[in-house]
Image 1 (cartoon, rainbow, N blue to C red):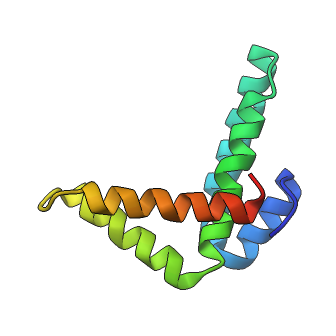
Image 2 (tube, rainbow, N blue to C red):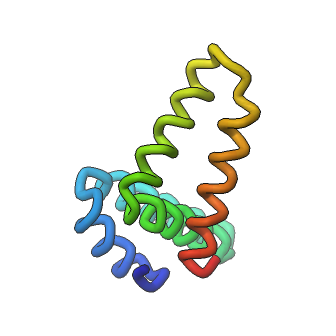
Length: 101
């Protein structure tokens, strides 16, 4: 896991999901702007949290694929989403723990 800094997260994203660099850059810009506007570090903390969880998830291709499958199940809405939501929560909690959050 990379350090929870914008540069370290960007480097990790560049290795595991380079197509997501524009989204990371936009999110960082928005977080920085909001942090300045609100005089709070909360937007930057949320940025780091979000991308650290993404990296922790995507580092494990099976975990990432399962998460996408579960998200599709919830989005489509053809079956009870309860089990899928519980599994999504478990995947996110595992990723947070791996990221040290």
